[in-house]
Length: 371
Image 1 (cartoon, rainbow, N blue to C red):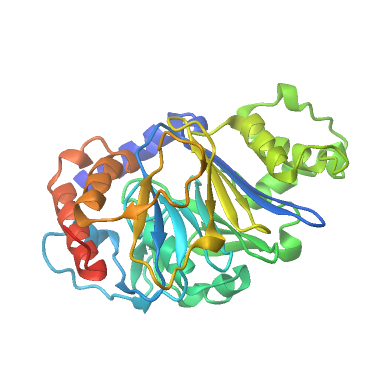
Image 2 (tube, rainbow, N blue to C red):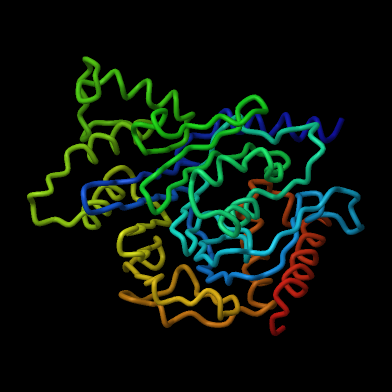
């Protein structure tokens, strides 16, 4: 009864909290000689790391139950060896990214989606959602690869009393997809079903149907970006991306930053220049734009490296990464999980202490890092 009451209470709270609290936006801006991914994380000021993840690492999966239990959990486990290295952005420590891109150009990000819950009843191993993202980055090189292997991938575990997310994916070829879990089933927008490569915080099909009521997209309604509501970020982004004039001096990368800032500047922001294989990012704390040249990273000959996502510098920071240690990862995990999980009691609970120890053990065992 207590667990039911807690779940009910969280459902009520979510129904009255403004969606702005959990708002994100992702898009692919593609032209003749450019392909740019843009992402806004609109939530709150957060600690976090940018991590270089090596290829060739043997890993095993962690469900939510396995993360928070102080005893051995009798559940199926999945294991794999990372085929590809990646750069990930994380609130929750190594192998638990919010988003990232691998060396083959596969990009994945999660965006909050109400009424998204785990698939129940399947006799398959589960992965906590952050590790599920890393699993895809470790194993697959294209959007099509992820989709074709989706039913063979582990089940996604969300927070136990909080809705989950949907995912925006893109790859080197400019292919995109939105992956959603609706009523216990995967719903995928891809190819002809994803004519506008933008994802925000409602179901993709619903956002697209609304967009199609506007003049520029086949409808009759007029849209004024200067007067748009927060909930219209999808429509606003679509209009901005359509209006780009390649004859102007503004580069596609600069214009992508313009779009991000005008649809609702996020606490974490990312631009991925696919053609030039570099990442640009900033945060509300580290406000200057930083660049990572992914072409200079040898993912086969590295141990995990990190830098603070809020680093106070600008320009190319590819050489600023430092070796990740178990204690440094522990520090970020201890700060990140109580923020990531919207549950005021979690940070004081026995489950939280078990989670800290289990992630400590996982990091030590998998990566054999210095203490």
